[in-house]
Each structure stands twice: as C-alpha cells, then as structure tokens.
Amino acid sequence: MITMRHVTVDCQDAVVLSEFWSAALDRPVDDGATVHAASIGMGFRSRQPAWLFLQVPEPRVAKNRMHVDFSTDDRAAEVERLVQLGATAHGEHDEYGVAWTVLTDPEGNEFCVGGPTPPSRAG
Image (tube, rainbow, N blue to C red):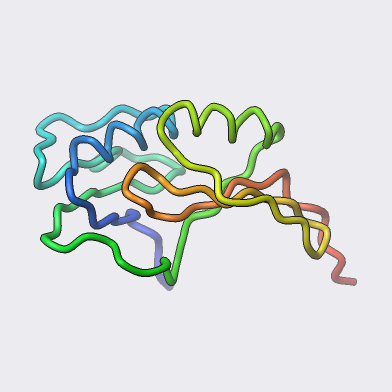
C-alpha cells in the first residue's frame, strides 16, 4: 500500500509559487522558504498532503501529464478567487455529469476546480 506524501511542483521561483499556493489552499508556507525550495505542510500531520516547490533550471514547455483536481461547493466563486490570486482560467467543461474549470497557476501548471463529486452510478 502507498500513501501520498506530498505534491511536488517544479518551478522557477519556489517562494513566489509557494505564496500563490499558500493563499489558494489557505495553508501557510513553512519557515525557511528560499527561491530554490519551499514547502507547505511538511512535518505536520494533516489529512491534506504537503506541497513541495523545487526550483529547476528549465521552464515548463508542455502540457502537464498529471495535474491536481480540487472540489468546491461554489465553483464560480472559487475560480474568481483563484484568478484574483494570480491563476489564469483556461476553459469550462461539463462532461459525464461533472462540471469543472481548467486553470493554471502563475508558472503555467495546470489544475482543475470542479463542483462536488456526483453520487456513484455503480450498482
């Protein structure tokens, strides 16, 4: 069995990106953040994974092959809040009974915000 330990994000400036995600997640950046490395929630027991931001020399050049999905009861308000923090909205989708918005963080990393997960149709 595996357990998610943290979400790791390659970036150009770990401080700037960790501050965006700190505001987005309403979780503080851990002490000791530098342009090279920063974290949110490392060393704390939480139901949410920690986030680790590591500076890399190259910029992001292609679409993420994996991304984070978030859920909220008020998608429109949450998307507006994230855009005000520095995210960019890239599209609204409504498929298979699920509606979501695709966004990117200030360094172009993709993530989605959807409404509550609909009840399972499995029977």
